[in-house]
Image 1 (cartoon, helix red, strand yellow):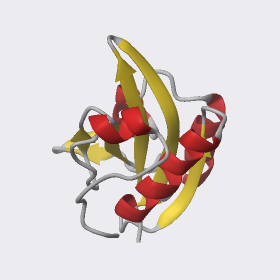
Image 2 (cartoon, helix red, strand yellow):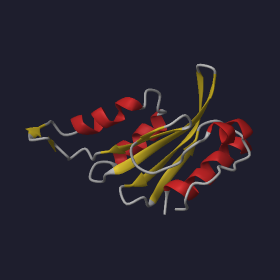
Image 3 (tube, rainbow, N blue to C red):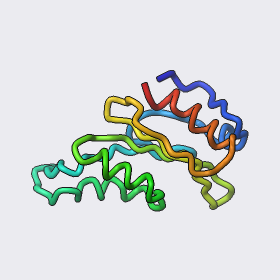
Image 4 (cartoon, rainbow, N blue to C red):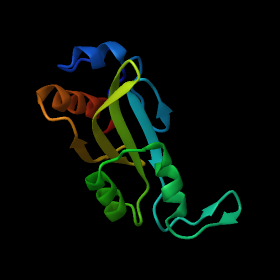
Length: 134
């Protein structure tokens, strides 16, 4: 991971809107990041939960995650804690999601998904990986 100074992808609007790229739980204009607990984690704040309930609660911030991303999280997230990042920019109130990056809780890269087709969206994901994953 490198320290954030200036985001430099091929997407000028995304670059202009990006004021922070950091790991962990984060809500910023161009980045939503959240720790996703494994399915088998059932205890939180002294309470017991059904397997999968805590993971579902963590995913509530990601309203429109594509099915392929959810399937990957379901597959890898049975035993493993992860961090899910959504990279997006805004045109007024309209959000454009470019893709998702998934790391483990130690920030090791696991996978990425480019949602918007084209080299500009791919360049956003490639550049963001440098900041979000080891």
